[in-house]
Structure formats: C-alpha cells, structure tokens
Image (cartoon, rainbow, N blue to C red):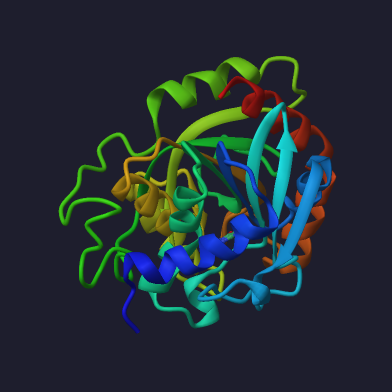
Length: 273
Ligand code: HPA
C-alpha cells in the first residue's frame, strides 16, 4: 500500500463533504474516555468503516466513529475509539488519524488514554499530563517513504508534548477535583499487560505510567509540526504493585468513574487552546 498524500486526501475529502467546516482541534479518546465524546454539540458522526482508506476499530469498548462538532467553543474532530498496534495494524497505518486531522485543518491534537500507574505516588483515578514518552519497541509510524507534504524525513521530537499546552493543562487542574501529575508515558505493545519485572524495569528507565497507545499519534503530530497535548487516566496500578491481577474490567470501571470530572477538565482545557 502506497501511503501518499493523495491516499490521505481521499479520506479527508469524504469527511469534508459531510461536515463543511474547518476543524481546529483533533481529539483522540482512549478507553474509558468514550463518555467525553457525549459533550460534543452540533455533531456529525461518521463510522470509521465509511471513510475511504481509513482503519477499522476492533476493540469492543471503543465506539469506532469520527465525531465532528463543537467542544469548549472550538470546532473539533474527535476519534471516539482509536487504533492500536496490538489489533494487528502496522505502525505505519497508525499515522492515518492524525494525518486526517491535519488535512481537516486541525492546528493541534489532544490525546487521551488509559494507563497503568508505575510511579508509586500515583493512584487509580489520577490524571497524568504527558511530559514525554519512551518507546523502545515497534516501528515508527513514519517508517517508509516520507510524505514530504506532511513533514521532513528526519524531525525533532524533543518538545513533542508542547510545553505551552502543558502549562495550560496544569493551570486548569485546580478545582477540577482531579489529582493531576505530569510525567513520562512508557509505551508497551500489549495486548498482554506487563509483567512485574517489566514494570520494575520501566520504573528504573524513567516511566511514570505505562500504556499501549498514544505514541504513534504524538509522533505523527510532531512530524507534521502540530502541537500536541496528551493525558493518561491512571486506571490501575501497574503489574506487581498490588496483589490483585490486572483486568480490562478494572481499567474500564475506573475510567468510567472519573469520566465526568475528566471530561469537564478536558472541556476547560480545550476552551483555552
Ligand atoms: N498497562 C498497559 N496498558 C494499560 C494499563 C496497564 O497497566 N492500564 C491501562 N492501560
């Protein structure tokens, strides 16, 4: 498959025909963050499978639709449900959502995910603003022939999680009822949760939270020069910290429990972007 500019433009043209606006902010909502999408008004919903050259969601808790509308007074394009490498996608395929955002006019992206707490000071229900990430496994989403229209072959990622946007996110935290940290997200490919030994290694390497998503989207945004802000909802303590086994149920339960406060917080952040 040739991932040319025209390939992505076909997806964008289909969306533009159904929603004739310029999007300002691209949002990707992870597991447990789905309810946030409910606060988008004046909305048009497009199932992923209707969008030409786009990917299909296979995770049952992810809705699998692109929602276009207004949130916090801003025009947003929102992926309700995202794509992960553990579903079988090549890393290169995972560039599609953010490239679509770019072509729809978005000037920045906001990413959310559910993650395990590696930092022993974190608690389930806390939120972490990503200051950086560590991705030691899997290809780059920018592997393969470079699409010059989006960005250069080699690109800087030293401020991938934009300091100015992180400052806004920090400023919005007081009064949200949430405990908001700032830390490093460690990508693991999944779908298995990590082993206790892996979590000890991740902590030694500087990870504060661990998860199976987000990094491909942040890298794609960096490639096309889009400012990026990302949040982890800490849904569980990572493997080996507590006695109980990790489960998808726990992740979704905690995600849903704080969805109200988190969506209010995110709405406030989006208003200021
Ligand atoms: N590990 C990886 N991904 C996750 C976790 C975890 O503990 N919790 C939620 N997503």
